[in-house]
Length: 182
Image 1 (cartoon, helix red, strand yellow):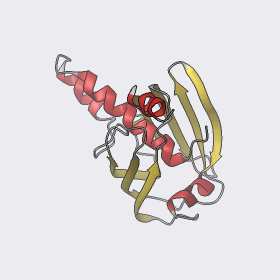
Image 2 (tube, one colour; image 1 turned 135 degrees about the vertical axis):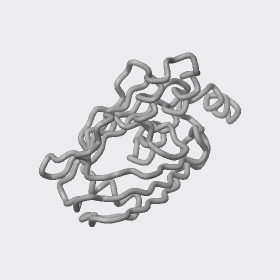
Image 3 (cartoon, one colour; image 1 turned 60 degrees about the horizontal axis):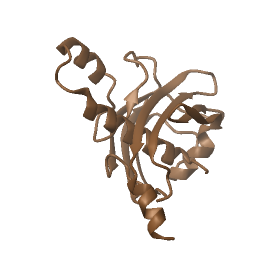
Image 4 (cartoon, helix red, strand yellow; image 1 turned 90 degrees about the horizontal axis):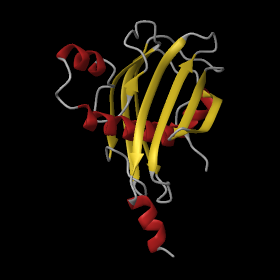
């Protein structure tokens, strides 16, 4: 199964949404506040990997996924806005890891600029405001289960751009759709 960056982000978003549902109000307020500091603003399951993002080259202001959480067999719309603090040049890369439960499906390094073409952008990405809208068809054959995604992004000079993670749980509905087509 081939995963595009947008599909990976979709999986990350859905997973984080599931985690939020299980968090509950019984935790001490200080713990909730620290966990919330990692939430990416907007309607999504994305989380930042670290609370200190002062050195990141991108400030994500909002990411909206529709539907949230993503569902197998639907069109996922990803809308993201942010600010690029320094130009992102050819040679930028993303370390990408995707797990299905405890099984690592993907552990690779991808060319960020090549992947940006999937959202109609090209490097260099200039300093300033940025806005991305992308539609991704999620296959109905996505096996049910828990997917965890980690995307750690770096410039050509190994400066940190951003790091995002998400956990998405796809239900049995995906499998049911497959069986109905037999």
